[in-house]
Amino acid sequence: MTLPPDRLRAALTGISGILVTPMDAEDRIVPQRLSPIIARAAEAGVDTLTVNGNTGEFYGLSFAEAERMQAEVPALIAGRTAVVAGIGRSLAEACALARRARADGADAIMVHQPPDPFVAPRGVVAYVSKVAEAAGLPVVLYLRNDGIGLPAIEALTRIPGVVGVKWATPNVMVLAQAIRRAGPDVSFICGLAEPWAPPMTALGAQGFTSGVINVVPEKSVAILRALRAGDFAAANAGIAAIHAFEALRAEEQNGANVAVVKAALALSGMDVGAARPPAAWPLPPGSAAALRDLLAGWGMLAR
Image 1 (cartoon, rainbow, N blue to C red):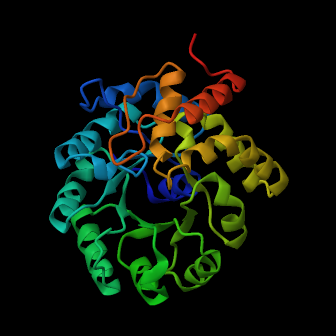
Image 2 (cartoon, one colour; image 1 turned 60 degrees about the vertical axis):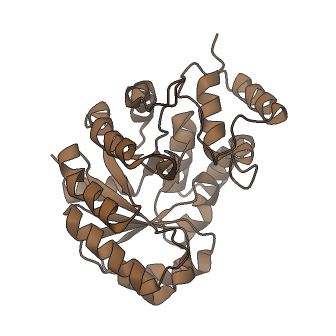
């Protein structure tokens, strides 16, 4: 059973945690290895967990693997948080995932912005419209490129079923205009994780996405609570506390983004396997040592 609209909207304006996709030593996905990660995130107070997001290596998964993650992870979450299913790829594949999302236990879908090099703004609107119609669930847009322009962004927010936009571009003044032009009752969410949450919150976004929740969800929840209290000093202090971790993730043109999360989980005793190419794996010796030192300082190294 999907969440009532008011509860889903409240969850989406909190922390949207993006789960990793666990692999075994033979590079086969092992969804059940998410169990301790999910339990800790839910206990910490993470509002929403997303399967098949970018931290989940969505574009590194086969379609069958993406189907399996969408089918199995909601049962692992078991109602402890809202569940969002990441949807994308070709239109046919996206609609296929979207059609089964409700039966799989998702409360909403998140539509990845098409990465095709030949994208027309109106083509993106047509793509999302067809996926939203196939899903019959609330839709969150994942906007990583605002180059499609404000008219197209406004049109996207007015597609029936769209309830939120994860704004994942640093153009905050464009964000401000998009919020003003959006359809009614559409929430904007900081899609660039904790470091960008304060300025986007100041402009009207609510909540943020996070990959850090796989490792230290308590730190993300503390940042959200500070922002909700209007305590930007405390929020910025919390962000400073995870800066070294986020800096490691940003290495190699952000190619270490998932790799650092997976390496940190392994160091803390939760083996979720390697990050697949084209991600940066394994971490270079200097980065691996820095990550180990950071986790030791957080008291998280496995014994």
